[in-house]
Amino acid sequence: MSFAVVVVLGYLLGSCPWGYWLVRLVRHEDIRTVGSGNIGATNVWRTYGRWLGAPVVFLDTLKGFIPALAGMLFVSPHHLAGICAGAAAMLGHWRPLFLRFAKGGKMVATCGGVFFGVAIWVALTAGLVWLVTFLVLRYASVASIVAGIALPVAAAVYGYPTSVIVFGAAAAVAILFLHRANLRRLRAGTENRFQWRRPASA
Image (cartoon, rainbow, N blue to C red; front, side, top):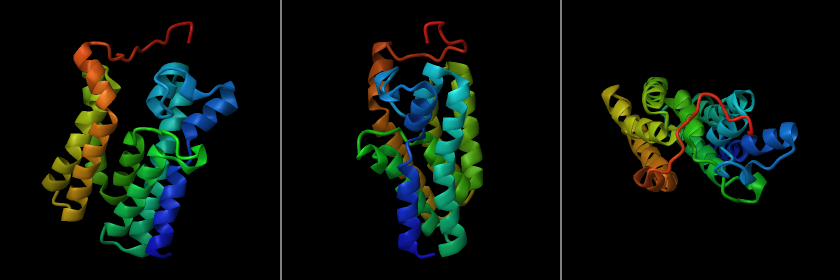
């Protein structure tokens, strides 16, 4: 498998809009017209509950993990191919080919999948940071931002190569950029806090 093939594979897998597809299949609705309008797992979970949200989390993570791991196993064990394939998957999630490059998700779960493929200890650490932050504050956006910031820090602490640290920093910046509307709502006090029980009207 060549470098170019694994990068293209990454983008194509990343372009699979599972949040959009599963909601269409099961509920016959367009996820882009409900909740925040985002196709990612947070909006699916908040709007339709865990029975649809959990599969979207898993599939969005998997589409980052598969190309990243393929790059590590079949192209180069020195992280670069896995990072580039994973970055392509993240790009596909943000601007999916299968939605005609329309606005996609915010890349958090897909980014986690990439790190599971190239730097598992970074992924586990950032995942723990996300979980603790979310349980304490109940803001998925804040948990995602804090976990994103943890990526390059954890990569440096664990002694991963510079390419992984730089990729972690770039991913953190991308996550911050894609959550800029959430940051504005947080400042205004209008950001949605996760409710453990969905309203009956949902």
